[in-house]
Image 1 (cartoon, rainbow, N blue to C red):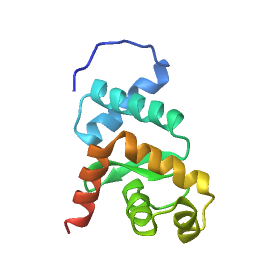
Image 2: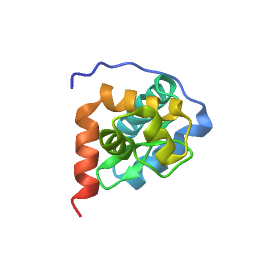
Image 3: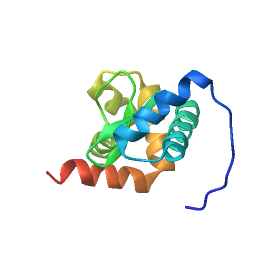
Length: 120
């Protein structure tokens, strides 16, 4: 994916925190900053979707639950209906729609996450 360079300023007291997290993940601070910025922008665009570490690296999941977006998509594929999928998880339909919207916008990510998690 093509990238561009943009800079931003952060609070002085956050720099050591980012550096520590980058060392722990064995990546550059700039790479970690880009990852965090990307994820926060996506969380704003798709409320209810968050990100966590998983077998495939970072994984999209439904905030407040232990369910990955790819799992919501799999259940939806079986039920064929947002309402039935929502009942399966005991969630409001809007939560399911948000997860499915994310999955639709980023199908390659979802495929990779599903493959990594189900390969075991």
